[in-house]
Length: 328
Image 1 (cartoon, rainbow, N blue to C red):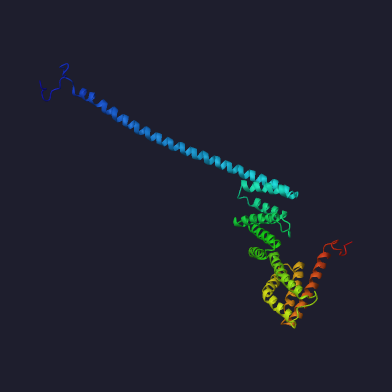
Image 2 (image 1 turned 180 degrees about the vertical axis):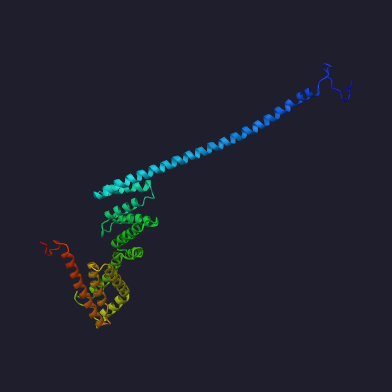
């Protein structure tokens, strides 16, 4: 039997009319439960993803915190090793100092003072003039540390001291060109420091003096004899030396004069100016009048050197046997 249009439908089981709202309630629960379950899974998934991100962030933060803590501890340990090294260095325990400075630089590679002290300790162990593998290695290790300081863009004083440290070591290793390079670097960084100019002058005198003396020995000349332009062999040697040493001598004189200009009582520079003018005079075979003038200039620098040394000694009672009257 078909239900009447507009009437309430009957239950086929009971034959009783079932209100429409009840049928609707019986149909919707499954749909509502399905929707609720879908929404619940979606929310749970988002919460799960968010929790995973949070855990990862917390893990990274913990790792960074541990790293920063480790770095802080390393820096503190590095400074402790630096202080121990300084104490050992002051007590002339250089090998012990080197060990502490090495540990300090390993713990904190950015600690410039540790590298400076390490370079200085290596240089202190170097023996000038001893051409042995171990000794040269000590100098090379010092140079390497000084160079690292230069590469780290430190304060000007540290730059200057590093450049001068490298130059000094190269000078004693007889690597004159390298020594002059770093002395010039130091002079560029501190133009008012007379020592780099003086050192370049000393290097130039050494570079000119040695080959000249070798040639004089071959010619059998006495110390007081100058190269004679009337002697064929001496004239040839003189011309060759003048061509080779002339620019070096000029550079040396200029640098020594600059050093004295910056430090008027620089008696060591005065002494080398005397020597440099004698170098110049000996190779002036084509200008005998110029030779005589240069020898007079050399003698005048001897006088100035002695006078300056005397004046310094008079200011320091008890030094070098010269004293000045004391106030009563």
